[in-house]
Length: 554
Image 1: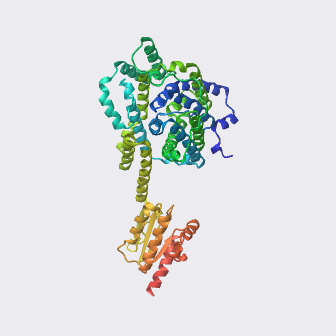
Image 2: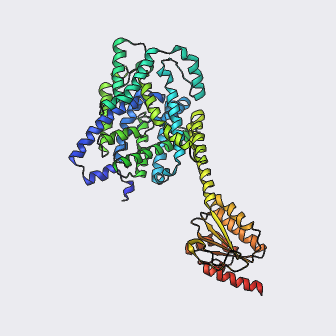
């Protein structure tokens, strides 16, 4: 069986896992589980769902992801990247709509894995990824302003601009207690691990702020005041009523969840590979992620993917097999069963502080700044994706960003096609490509084409060769360095041949091997040129050109 579609855990179990590695994995899973708790709760609340949905996702998706995934150390669960999409779906279609969209996205991810799209997603431009990631970070930050300042706005608009208008209208209602807790949570989250490396600062922030609020009756919003108690048990799997119109309405968001999940998961896997010197199985990763989202959504979970921060924490604490990821989910399960009644006391301003740190880490401002100093096309892709994400919609941003990147790529590729001409006026014996010496007779033009002859470059190719001021008797088109010709390229070749046939100018095509000759035949090129004028070697082409010159002379 092809190892590409074998879960990494299965391969490692077959090889055997040492007792020492197993011990390190269990300890790392314990730490990562504690780290994941506040993030799972915070991501769920920021997405517009109840806090237990985030914990359920981290438990179910995390176990499935680690068991069947293609990475040794990847940790799966809810991430900040999905907040924007999930919040938008909840606003328009409710929780049932989110379940259906996540369910559909899971099948799309599995399909992408089976079609080996994992090998293609790595070609998405970095400027596009930084653009929408930075946009998401800004949206996450703006979504936390209400809880950070304790403004107590009951319904915050979904749109970025409308949201800030409401904030400015209500800033006079700020709560100093909420601000103090949020700032303290930020400082603890950032700096506590520099003192005690094994314990995440976010957990300490939650413990301290919860104890203070509970014991001193501090007037701030808590999870209980906003969402009620957190249940300490799972509900039964639930499939909402689905209609064709619902599927149509949710197909676009499902596609966005799938694409974003795939990109984030594979980015995380690549980062973890560089940390441990490993190599993940990208397509198996996508299949596992699809399955994880399908199963998680049945229990009311939100979208899940590979989490870079939790994966890095796993690696730094000694995790080296998927067992660490399974243990992390089991730790969260134990916390949910035993401590869920106490989690309702967590202040919302504390979670806002933790999410603002997450947003800052997601923002990639250094990379953003670096790209702004680079290529103009990358800047256009970066800023377009960023502003579309913030002002309009992440789905629109990804779609337009990919289309724009494709056009930019085609433009670059078309410019990379080099067309050079050599005539009888060039000095005899001049060096051409590969230090080659060719004797080109008078009345002959030699065109050397370098680069892919695809639809982006075909028009340039056709115009360059046809619009010459010279009046040769024979034209040689040398194509030895043309790696690809698409349908548009073949149409251009046929257009050139027909134009020169009308002008009574012979065209000889050189550098055509066996496979390319077969493609010429399939695409009807030989209906426009005699087969003996399509040759493999330049010397044969020059010999044929001389023979045709003799014919003209006669």
